[in-house]
Image 1 (tube, one colour):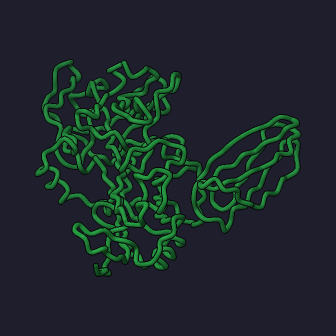
Image 2 (cartoon, one colour):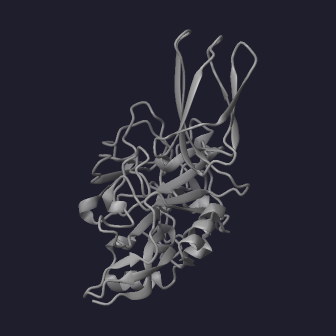
Image 3 (cartoon, helix red, strand yellow):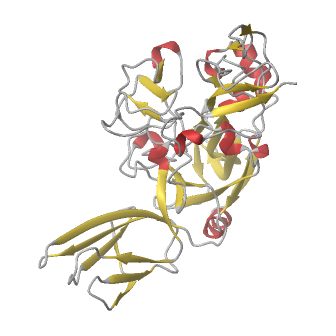
Length: 403
């Protein structure tokens, strides 16, 4: 049996945004194969994102004879490999690929309207970054998704329009999307839209569980109990203790100045503890060593903590996984403004925003209480988010002006 030297796919990441893939109320995954193929011809993730290897990743790609390419569906990395010559062939990296090898890509926004049409939280964003990984990082995932499963419902939490929760972290079969600002549980159909896995709805979208605190090289941590001189332990994502420079600034309430300059980018955890007086705290964060400001980071390791996500099988052959990142399109209530309308000229339910297709037969009440029918769909240039600041407003609104 002779060996054949070639290039083969090491991994692929498909970035699917449903604002561009859905058509009106028709969901991409429920379309026919022909319809999906047609809409994918128009889709190009490069119009939404710039995906750039980190400086360390560039070195890793070069050292391992890898080829990186941003594609219309996301990104792909190829690797010089040798075929075993069988049918079908299997491929091994031509040069050994160490199990702890890591590839990191920064995801930058190109489209300034992105947050208008994407169902992501609009609050709590400052000082955070979305982290997508082929390791669990303490959160449940469903292969091939790189995003975490949406959280479970939490009593007493106020959910904003578009917030997503799942029915089961380990194996979600139902996804619930908030129609409006609510503290109601998911049995309230006015407050929540329910989608079933059995009805061919996707269960994995980028959500709040993918968000991490962001640290750039160094940061300050303030102990909130007086007189504490804490012991600090910092670990990387593999659970290994790392030794960082930590200066304790004077004062009754100690402030720790933590310097992680020069450490590899990635997820870290810090445990702060004192026996007397008693004190304990844990934080988790993503360390970013570059001055750029990406919305997210994709970080992939050769060896995952879940074998489904590994880049190599136990015999060292390439598994060539095609991972997924899905972004859900935002839904808004539509408010019509013009001579025949008033403040009550708003749709009863939120409608999805999509690039293609239209919602037909949209009806609202005009200022005289009569039905105004066959109304146009909104653009995504602006949405009104007063629900975040006004207690009596529960909706996110798209406004359509009609003379």
